[in-house]
Image 1 (tube, rainbow, N blue to C red):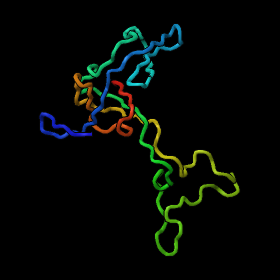
Image 2: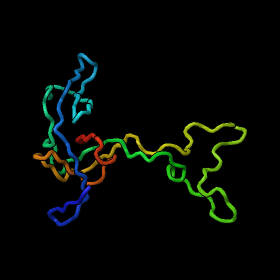
Image 3: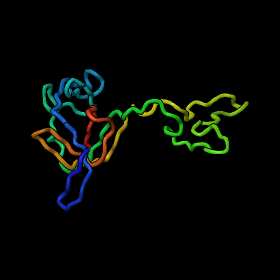
Image 4: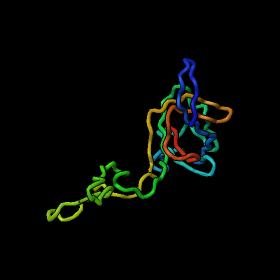
Amino acid sequence: MTQIATESGEMVPVTVILAGPCEVTALRTADQHQYGAVQMKFGKKLKEFRVEKTDDFKVGQEIKVDMFKVGDKVKVAGISIGKGFAGTVKRHHFSRGPMSHGSKSHRLPGSSGAGTSPGRVLPGTRRAGRMGNCRVSVRGLTVVLVNPEKNLLGLKGAIPGAGNNLVEVVKL
């Protein structure tokens, strides 16, 4: 992330993304595959995007960053940063126990199920476990910078994932 100044002098937080060129590697048509999609390649990674009409694309075509304009709203999706195994206080924002008077349950979850009825812990109960490392989408980010020479795209705000991660940028 970085920041840039607008014409009015306002400082805007910007995430700069290397956004292309992406090469179209395959087309899926509704006649042959029962759905329409475009398969694209960025580096060594492949991703398929569903589209209604594949007539606008050709195999070998390059999709570049110049399809975006300053002021466009986009959705960015990616894999969030993994935080490993986390307890209930960190993962679900449970409150902690008392810290004094001999208490030994400072950050423990406490009781998690009923007694005799139903006599088990119900599915979906919030407990300790792996946190992060899941697909996250951020909608409504604004494009504030487009550099077609270097294929750079600047978005106002933060995007999911660590640095050098692969993300999808879709125009809303």
